[in-house]
Image (tube, rainbow, N blue to C red; front, side, top):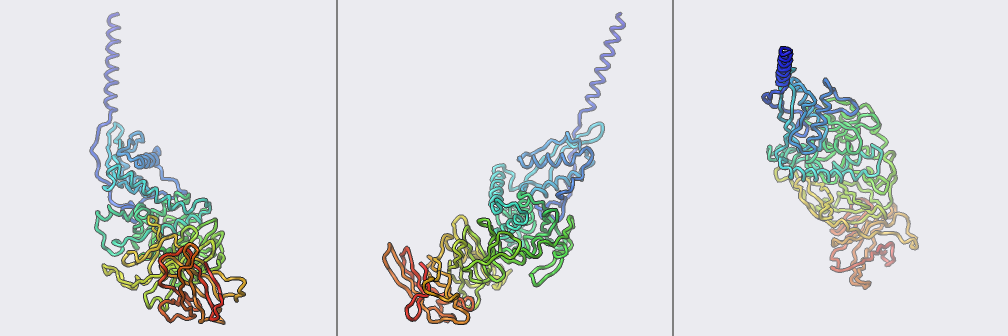
Amino acid sequence: MKKRIFAALLLALLLALGASAQALADEPEAAETPDAPPSGGVFQNGSFSGPQTIPGEPMAVAEDGWKAGLYAAVLNAWRAGETSVNVEPLKIPSAKWNALWDVLRAVLNDNPELFYASWYTSKDIYYYPNGPLLGSLTLLYNDTYQDSAVRTQAIREFNEAADRALAQIQGLTNPVEKALLLHDFLVVNCLYNWEVATDQEDGDAYVASKMPWTAYGALVKGDAVCQGYALAYKYLLTRAGIPSVVISSSSMNHAWNGVQIDGDWYQADPTWDDPTPNREGRARHAYFLLSDTTFGSDDSAKGRSKHYDWDAIVTCNSTKYESGYVFVDNENSLYHWNNSFYFIDNDGYVCKSSQLQGSGTRISGGLGLTALSTVWLEDRLYLLPNAYNDSYASNQRLLLVYDLDDNITAQAALFQHVPAASPDGKYQSSSDRIPGIRYNAETNKIEVVSPTRRTVITSIPASSLSSGWKTDPELNISSGMAVASGISKDGAAAIQWAPAMQNPRSDLTLWAAFYQDGKLTAVRTTPVQAQASTTNISNIRPTKTLAYLSALPSSYDTVKLILLTPDKLPLCAAG
């Protein structure tokens, strides 16, 4: 009996010792942290190549699906601002280090909102009896965003900027319409980085301050290089439900986007649709939704240069959007307002269309002047017209405003602009001949900006809108004798007179009567001529003349403008 009891106790002891030994064998042993990953492969750090997820193509899943699990775990941890993530349950073999780095790069390349994250991490490796496995990752952040409060503020700024862009497509469902308006918003509100464009970048300090290679730089700072444009466009398209990728060419030192619409891929390059040096208010469409063949071909007539040697991660065969749409060859941004699209056609007329396909309809009251820069704001269009002739010779420039409700064109500002080279000598004065215009939301002003100096030449309140001219039907005026323009609050009044081609008039006089509280306080007059010959008349186009009144009264609340014949008969009036 005692022997059996002793044997049982001995067996129990041996079993316990064996279990303890097995438990000790199963405990992981910390291994040395491996070397840092190889450099490159992250777009927001300036790389032109790197892994990314192609929409519609499944991720190449390794054994037990650890790649998809790692991708999701790291993405969620970075979004949450965590400093480490436990991946031990994924059982990732340490031999898969290179594949792991590719997953981490793809997380950053697929998600431009992670502009604050560093692309490399440190990791812990544990040795198990069956082999070493990855235990945890230490997530790192760019130097600028090490502080969580700074990072949180930057993320808030980024989200607010993205929401402003996405407000352009509110209520739209057509992917082409959304892709177009987001393209135009990005091009108009971002400028190509000056220091990088002119080889003056200041290393890490500069990158840390403006982030030109990131979507944050493009959307928040309005200052980016091609990677910043491409990442910002990718993020906005993703938010809009449109698949996209970043396409790049190391030979060109350039990156852009592939955009998928209705199952077909198209090339789009918002960077090259933005003039350099930047002209505010300008958005071209020379590189928007093109096939590979068109994208890789020169076309001087359309102002398009070919792209080459790009990483063909998607194939773009369709030419669907290269003709028959209002944005094709259009040199200015399009605007969506009150369920219609507004744009300026190649002859300079303001047009309206319920859809992007077709040619649209010209709206009455337009000047027929090519717009060099535009700002669309609520129910108005501000434009800097292509007005050469006498006004350019005297460095006189004109800013016009067009009322989309009333179809009235009027003077918004008359200003002087003397073209000058950039202070660093990188651009000559010829690049400054045509200024740009932009809207400053903080001051609620339209600003005219020098391309080479990036300084404000003049500004006007965005609410300033001239009175409109209209022909009195009782006067029995012949069609085309006198139409559109008005008066502004910036110290000048103007009319735009379009005499009939076959019967030009040069004997008219503009009278302006100013009223305060219903009482006449002042009268001003100036002659109107079919061909400009004096300093206060600008012949901006044959048969279209602007006559300006100077020395306006300092105080008035209403004004009546009347165009009189030599017999003092009113030809048309506005008030």
